[in-house]
Amino acid sequence: MKPRVDIRERLSDQEVASVVALVDAATEADSVRPLNEHVMLHLRYGGDPGARVVLLYDGDELAGFAHVDPTDQVEGPSGELVVHPAHRRRGLGRRLLETALTESGGRLRLWAHGDRPEAGGLAASMGFTRVRSLWQMRRSLFAPLPTREVPAGVRLRAFDPATDEEAWLKVNARAFAHHPEQGSWTLDDLRRREQEPWFDPAGFFLAVRDAGSTEGGAPTGAGDRLVGFHWTKVHGDDDPHAPHGHNAIGEVYVVGVDPSEQGSGLGKTLTLAGLCHLRARGLAQVMLYVDEDNPAAIRLYESLGFTRWDVDVMYRHS
Ligand SMILES: CC(C)(COP(=O)(O)OP(=O)(O)OC[C@H]1O[C@@H](n2cnc3c(N)ncnc32)[C@H](O)[C@@H]1OP(=O)(O)O)[C@@H](O)C(=O)NCCC(=O)NCCS
Image: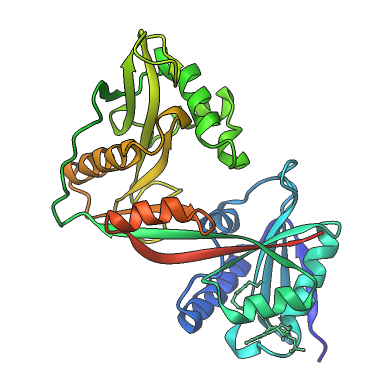
């Protein structure tokens, strides 16, 4: 019987259960989850208007699943797909990807998890190019952490939304000038995160110098100059953004140092201050995301005991 494709915006409870069973079977076979948390949430609770799911049936059995999200106006449509392990190498992956491409108008960013050869093979065979590889690194927080002096003239204090937003946006843009996704954050982007249940200024460290002592960084409303920051985050069990099925885990969310202060060890000092904070909160583990093509950051995190835990690869079509 010819495989049958069904394109939908919402799924019934029974269909969601079939997709979850397919995802579990693939996770078991590949040792990595094929879909990110956002897609799993979309499945369970409905998601961004306009996003589509593709169900691929072989007879009565659900053999493949794809999710296409055309809502990102800046970066373009994105998607993920998975074929049940018992139905692989029969052209179903190709069929799903062709359907996803048609749904997205021929332009698609495809995310694959775990950097496995079959994903790379399928993507290449359909004319996709590998454009980005995002590492997730982790470290235990049980082991004690080294202490480190802050550079002379620098103080660490907590972020205060009342005085520090503008300065933070400036230093973030300067620190991430070569990383458009992070460097182009606006006041709206920042405030949206301040509204999140996980937002905690006590875990958002700023490195500041006295006003007048430096031309670098950016002046804050508190009368000092911001030269670097480390924003930590805690994912809890009841946090919808949490990595699947874990107890609370800390995250090095963003570390940035103003170019005027780079190379002085401030990045390491700030990272350690955040790790000590997370450890003091009783968390057992900390994770972070870093681009594979950022060897300086990877070296810093490795020197602090982080190792690669997982990798997400992005392939792009036109
Ligand atoms: C990647 C995946 C979707 C492939 O599904 P599939 O139905 O087995 O793929 P197809 O049979 O359609 O294969 C199409 C092409 O992909 C490539 N491919 C598929 N499996 C491969 C493997 N194990 N090694 C190398 N290339 C592979 C080949 O070029 C293949 O063409 P060919 O059969 O003519 O050689 C499937 O292995 C899967 O679900 N993996 C987990 C989820 C995932 O990685 N998703 C991201 C996809 S980019």
